[in-house]
Length: 600
Picture 1 (cartoon, helix red, strand yellow):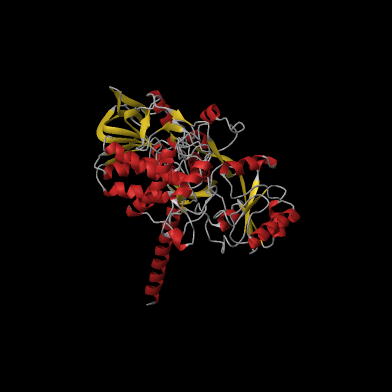
Picture 2: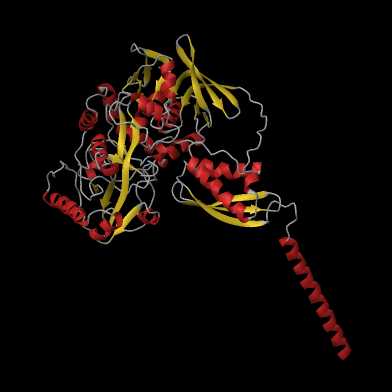
């Protein structure tokens, strides 16, 4: 029995030793790196600063290859950053290289992903220099592809998508071409405010308004430069456009508000962040209905003519030339030229040089449609009227990070802590006043009336706590504390707020001529966010009539050619009211689609 026990102990000992050796052997084999290995196999994480904060990636490698890349965390704008998030990791894996091209329109996000992956590869012991060398491109055969449809739409922003949906609803088949790798244009970057005289919402809020008042403010707000027929069509069709969008499934908040430079509380705010609600609504319709085709990465370069009529377009695609023939007509909805510095300077007559001023616009807003229309004899008007906002992010020029929730509850102060302008004035008035301040820099100051809790978000889907954590907004439990945080004179800031509060209490007009007020700034905590001038909108462009038909230099209709949105001129005059752009693109996008479908 004792011998049997000893035998069992020996056997158990030997089995344990075999198991230990096996485990150690496996571990050694896993941790060993062969001499020709490119990486130390494993999973690594790293971060890099993107457009709206850190982007965190997870990179998995074996000894010879990058196997997987995941974006774990990011705060980039939906729609704008999506192509970079989708394409950059795939391009790195497919090519086994860090030398991949940034995605047009999402360059900062692209670069951040590449940098984060690079840092992770460093942790894996990869040869960064070798992986960063540009590989010779494959000789991909380029070919010409031709399509035929009823209506061609150039541009996949709010105006182009409205035109595409409207044309389809009026019986036409549609092909939309967008030069960027995504839909959205400037619309998806916007705060989402849409002006319309609303008999339901405004009545509930006790707001007196009328279509005539909207007409007058739009016309006079543009220094009476705008075409009165276009303005009348615009204001009369703004609320029907809201109803049309709602019929497509879009949701707006129950209350209207006054947007920066809007002059009156008639701005409708979508229930979804930014301008994504507009784009999502149009996309949902297109996805649910046959007959609308979207071609991305398709840069239209030329309008095709036959016997004086526009009959199609020519474009450059990723794999070759694209030609689309249009049975009925072509709608130009390519946006303005706010992102084209040379073009801005060519036409600018009202501002100091704009070469160093950043823009809120997406990179595709380069005036392509204006140039194409000009080439076929279209008349161009109001190109000298370029709108600047006082609301640009100091680093990027974008609208993101703007802490204001509406006009009535905040003030602007300069670096001395003093107010300097009517904060409810026209956008050009406010921007010109800001340009006269030290470093053309200001702080937006407000209180907990706008942010009752730290998780409340601004109009760009950013919470105030997030902005504070990123150093883009500042907080103080007293005005003295806030002044210290932002580096302004505390006495000046306190005086500015006190004088503002006195006018709120007594009513009327303050020393700067301001008449739009709601609550006092008296409920801590107090908040401040930095802002600078930025190029926002180009009021000039292609001349159209009330049917969105393009006119030539002699005032005649160019058959088969239509235009809508910021690519056009004549509606906003010398200054666009805040909230009028999204109404404009919905109204005239809808009209352009209907006219093109009817071959009007």
